[in-house]
Image 1 (cartoon, rainbow, N blue to C red):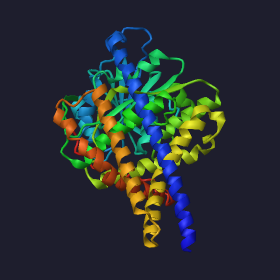
Image 2: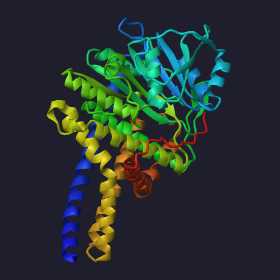
Image 3: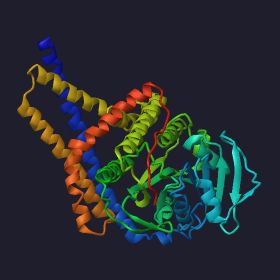
Image 4: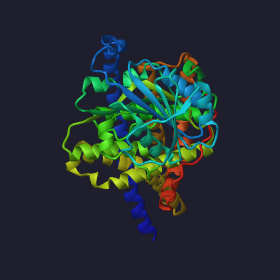
Length: 467
């Protein structure tokens, strides 16, 4: 038995080392790609000012759809923010998805809304709509009250009532920079024939001061858990998504802030309601549909349009959020499994789907396997502790370097933190993230597999303080 275990440990160890090298090679490639892409964006900003884009007849009007469920602490600030965006023609559709708190009441009171008879074409099937609210003093604002059907159902209801060829999905507990809509629509001007979706960067509002729907002051939150998430978000967006976007391999546009061609989304039947990861599911289904139609397309990520949102500040809320995200990833991969390694689906089937499957989906299971093999080998005296310590130090070092690179990319591209000490305060978290935070999230994601097999469909409660 000892010899068999030694063989298993040896083969598995080499497999994990190869996996580690391939994964981090991808991450390093994405970081390098991001540097060149961010350089391009900086040059573009010097040559073409955003304000010069607005008067052109090519700019298409946009419908902003903001689903809301129990958002009484932030809904007024968010809607105020959406109504103050710098963009020529757009509408804001807030969908109250059967909230049990004062979300609808606060909207009605603050914006002096009146219930009206509103005629629209119900293309997508949704839960019944209980009322539509308007105020002529706010001609861009439309509030829809409906029975609870969860986020995808609320977005579909907003699509039914929307009027414009582009729609922007925004979380109702988020705040956009005033020029974010101008910037996120840019790919539809640069390449209108092929661009079908685009998304901006998500930044964390914890610790920031937001007044009257606008970010007034950016500051570093004191909460340790949120600081870990800041690094994680910077690495995911400025490192990962920028590189994947360059390779046209992006499978997710964040549900908090993304813009889409309405005709393509309606052609695939809108958002799928029986998933907890509606944002990734939508993009993958769009790509699948366009590949099968043999149409050329682009899904873009842009590092300059910014959406501010509140991150979970306690472990229970964080675990619920990441558990749901991973269950959504599992659902999307299974629902579109025929695309995996399938040349019919081009870069999506041969690069994007394999990357997300091998490194995002299976990553926590492989990491757990490594820990289990190490413990088993230790019990039977089969571990070379020198090489084990060397590999662990290498893994922590590479992970810390990638996280540090993401912070440097933020300083290079956006430089939103006003004080040097804020940036310096993040540096220790680049190290500790790899020996504390990552292991915790890996366990949460492993548990997501168990919850998925049990058929769990709940989102899980996330406690938020509001702006």
